[in-house]
Structures are given as structure tokens and as C-alpha cells.
Length: 291
Image (tube, rainbow, N blue to C red; front, side, top):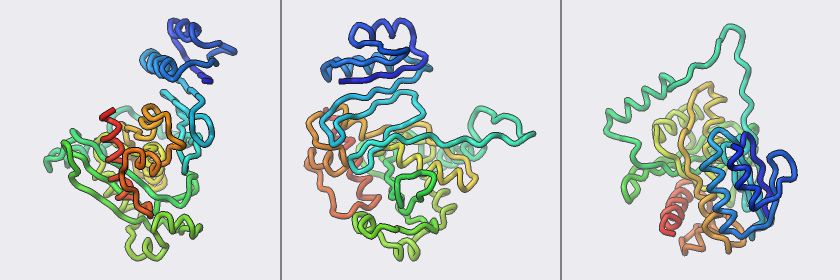
């Protein structure tokens, strides 16, 4: 069973969708098709929607019994320990009177970062794997407590970065802290102030493609940190390993990081620290690219 909602859909695509699905309201289609047909329909939607938006909900073998696909949508599905939630977009503040409209193009900070990376010989040819550990899943309330980054160049791992962030918001749940292997004392003693950590994260990522397991969750928290600090930074290119796993692996009980890693016989540690999870995500990404 699938439900597909489209906005600004070209007439030709509507006709294609109507061959396979029932349109029960304007832009809302339902039907029951095979996984192969579903994937072909979604590929056709993504190829033809251009400036339109699409969201698909389909039945699958996970704990909830369904999963999401989105294209050009502002609401994003995020996976929290096997439970799929929809992450709402950040509210953009209205410009103050006299501020005028924001100009299109790269900011001065982005240009300086790019020039600095080119001068040092680093380019955006590779990609960066990201993982963040947070005090919770609410992007407006919770904070990053640890970030891990891997720079992948060619077929191997290049530079890496890890740090704790002293956000002033502790880990309230002892069980969650045990799962991550992080204590409040570790963060307080070893952590960087948020602004220093954010600057280092931005410099490391630069203009790279960012890869992550539920990548919008990780990137969303980093971008939200920048907004709180009054600093401009936006990750423009991302690749979601979780979405890839859902598309390629139909037989899994759930799509937690450790479950997908186990499918490929990749060792997952007992604690869930940021840098080891980056390595695990990189391993899964490599395996999925072989399929």
C-alpha cells in the first residue's frame, strides 16, 4: 500500500501516476503495487517534478510498518532508534524593517572558507561523513554534545575530527549516556565552547558533500547551532545512507544503524560514540554502493 502526495505536479506526470494509482483528492494518490513498480514510480516523480514537491508513504517491514520518501519537501523524515518521525523546518525570522532582502549567492564567510581550503590544497572532490550525539531529538530544545567527522578522499579515510561541545545542557537520561558512553564530566572537562567547535566543524566540512546515516538529523543540528550563534553556514549537498538502506534492503526488521551494520557483518561497538559511528556509516555506505 502506498500514499503519494504531490504539489505543482506536471500534467504529464499526473497521467503516468493515474495509470497505477487512484487519485482520491487533488494531488493525492493511493494504490497497492509491487516494490519494483513503487521504485520506478518514485524515480519518475523525482525526475519530472522539477520545482514541485512529493511525499510518499509506503508499507514496509519495519517496526512501524511503513516508511517515507520525500522530494523537494521541507518536512524531512528522521529515524530515531527505528521510529520514523517527521522533522519540521526551522522557522525563519522575519527581516527587520530596513534590513532589506537577503541577497542570493555565497556569503563572505563561505568564500573565505573556500579560498582557505583551495590554498591549503584541499578540494571538495571527496566527501565528509558526519555523526552527532545530542541530548535529545528536538532540534529547537536539545543540543549537540559530541560531533565526529571523517574526510574521505579516494578509497580511504583521510582527516578526522571529534570534539565534545559544552552547551550548558547536560545529559539528563543516565541510560542514554551509557549507550553513548558519554558523561557530563567528560563533556565539561574535554569539551569546546560551542562557538569554537562550530568554527572547526565548518572549516572541516567546507564545500564537501556530507554523508550520514539520517543525514538531515545530523546536519540540521549543526545548522541550528550556527543560527543560535548568529553565524551563517549551510550544507548544500548531502547523501543519506539511511534512505539508501531502505531502498536496497527490504528484508530488515528495522533500519537502526546497528541493524544495517549487522546485515553487512560490520562490527558495531557497545557504546555509540560519534567517530566510531562515522566509521560504521562509511562502511555501510561502501557496502550499499556495491549493490
